[in-house]
Length: 215
Length: 183
Image 1: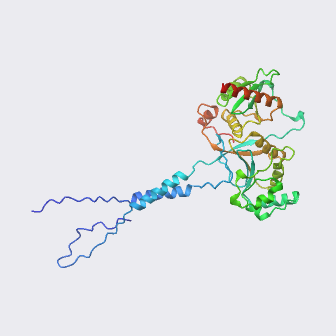
Image 2: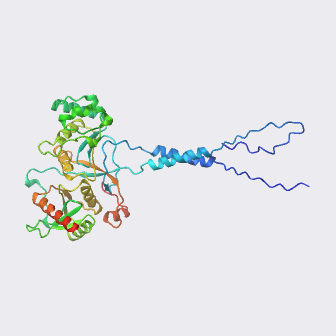
């Protein structure tokens, strides 16, 4: 008499499917992630309801840190060179062009730009640097910077951005705006963190009604 | 795939005398790999920032040198907001009275009702909001108040330099506000 065989079920689970999903998610996150570049200038930006994503090409970024110090960042090497030559010829600064091109940001009075450029890149940290002097109304060096930048970007697109810290006082921001105005750069954008539109407000009603927002 | 071998036991009998070659399982234990996968996923989930910074556009008016070239606004349609220290907001409608009687104090939370009230009362064409940040106000205050313009769909607003009289008034009110708060 044969005994009725109990079917033996394996306790092994097939992990293949799970593994597939895990690696699919993994590749998604690896591809979408963007590491924040180590920022030399620590800035916490305010929130706004603006929905437009900040541009990241052809930028001229003016950073105002929490003490109101002003720094300039540019991304185009050619323009950097043009700015450097302009400043060298007009102000006799004798700055090293290749060092100027390599620098991630600029934040020193013109008189000490040469020594600023001689500091190794990794030691250039916003909190130890003087920043570009703007508050002196007779010698707002931002004006000269803006003239040089405008000259370099003549005929090509420039995205003028201002990135300010929450705690930065208004006078430095005003000095920067004044420099823009002096150079007829009347259009600029302020970098903020996205925030949802408060419910019940007029803008909220408009968005709900499907109206497109003016930029 | 990982599942190749399905019958390591109980295959066909090849007949007597035929020795069964020992079959090695080709099954690989995937558990450590899955572990590693999920570990990396958690790492990337925590480090990733999904929200990209946004940009607020601002157009500056060109400075008019002659007073005749400046834009004129109807007095009844103007509301002036002054930004003070510690997130204080002050406002007055029309011209500032010499004795400061129409100078009122508010906060960032309440300013929306003030603005909406003004908006409901005035003709849309005449309504102009004048923003005057004092030197004690912060960048965040300025962005917040500009944002308030967008939220309340106020089309005409201007960022204007504060006058010394107003600066003084804001400073005094700030001091009075903090004194009463500490008492």
